[in-house]
Length: 559
Image 1 (cartoon, helix red, strand yellow):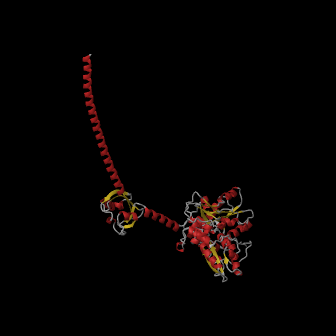
Image 2: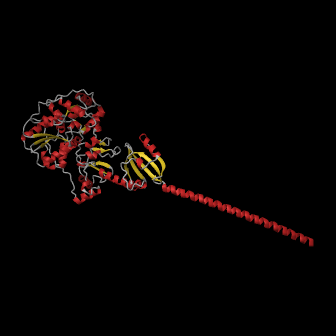
C-alpha cells in the first residue's frame, strides 16, 4: 500500500503531538516510535499540521511532473480555489507556471460549478434521506472506513478536482492534468482506480512555493468563469452558498473530523433526516488545508479575497452537465477485534488503573478514555506505560520512598524561611518526635550563625552552600547542604549527621595517642634494660681480665 505521509525518524522527537491529534487513532506508538496505520488513516493531515520538527514528509510527484515538462508533454494545471491564501493574483501564478513549461493553468472552480449542478439535481429529486457532500476525500474515507452503514448518505458525485480533470481531458485528450493541492488526501483521490484518467498527478502548494516563490500580494487577475460563486467552495459553508434555494433539505456546515464524527453518530442514531451536510475535514475548510498550514494567518486573507471576487446573488442553478460525474462509494469497514472485559481490565491494571477512580480520562496519551487506551494496547497500537498520571504517580512514589528512607535530614523552606516540608530523618535528628514543625521558622530548629548568614543572602545566590556546625541543644554536629529549587522560591536544606563519625574519630585519636604513649614506654624500658645489661657485661669483663692477668703472672714466676 502506498504511503502518502512518511515519518522522518531522524527528526522525530517523540513529543506525541501527532498521536494526540489523530482523530481516527490511526497512529500507533510502539518501541518509542509513532507509526501511521495506513488502513485506518483518512489523510486528514492533522499529524502533519502539528509536527514542529519536520518529521512528516508528504509523498511528492514534483520530479515526475518536471520530467513531463522536460519531455515537452502538454501539462495543464488545475488550481484549487484556496490558492489565494498564497498567491492573491491568479494571473501572476498562471504566468509563473506557464514560464516553467505548463501548457495552461485553470481554476478548479470550473469543476466546482459542475459539481454544484449535480448537487442541485439531487436536492430536487429528494430521494436521499440525507446528502453528505463528497468534495473532501478525507470525509469520504471516514464514512467508507468507519460509517459504512451511512454510505447511502454520501452524494454519488465526484469532487471538483475529478470533475475538472475530466473536463480538461475532454477538451485536451492528450494532456496531463496536474492538480495544485492544499490537501494530502487529494493525492490518494487522484490515484483512486474509480477515477482513472481524470488527474495524472498532484503538486502540493509547499513545493510549488519553493519552486516559483510567492507573488507580491496584489489582488486581482482572476480569469473569467461562468459561475464565479463556485470560488466559495474552499471557504466555510462555501458549497452551500453556491446551491439554489429550495426547502427540500435543511442545510448544515460541519468542519473538523471530531465534529463530523459526532454528526455522523447523530445521523446513525436517526436523529437527523432531511439534511444536506457540507462536510470538511479541516476546521476552516480547504483554505486551512494541511499543506497551507505553514502560511500563517493567510486563511482569513484568502477568505476575504475569494468573497470579493464572487457574485453572491447568483447561485448555481439546476442544469445538465455534458460529463458523467457519477461516483460509487464502497463500504470499507475496518476490522476491529472485540475484547472481553477481563482482557480490558488486565490492561487497565497494567496501566495502574486498578480502581475506577484512577481512570482520569485526561487524554494526554491521545485517547479519549483510559478504556480506549487499554483497547489500543490490546490492538498493538499503544504502549501501556505511556500514561502521564501513572508516570507522575510512580515518580512521586519513588521520590517519596527515597525521601522517607534516606538517612539524611531533608527540610524544605520557603522564601520567608518557613518550613514547608520535613522528612522523618530530620525529625529524628532534631528531636521533633512530639512537635509538628510545618509552618515554623527554620531558625526555631536550626539556630546557628552560619545558617543565619545564609538566610540573609540566599535570595542573591543560586549556588549550593555548604558548612559544618555543632548544635549543643542536640549534642550533634551536622554538615549542611543548602540549595535553591530551580525557578522556585523554595530552598532545600540537607543535614548529614556527623556526630557518630566525630565520636569515632575522637576514640580513634585517643587510641592512637594511647598507643603512641605505651609504645614510647616500652621503647624506654627496653633501652634501660639494654643499658643495664651493657653495664653488667662491662664490670664482669673487667674482673675477668684482672683475674686472668694475675694467673698469667703467677705461671710466669713459677717457670
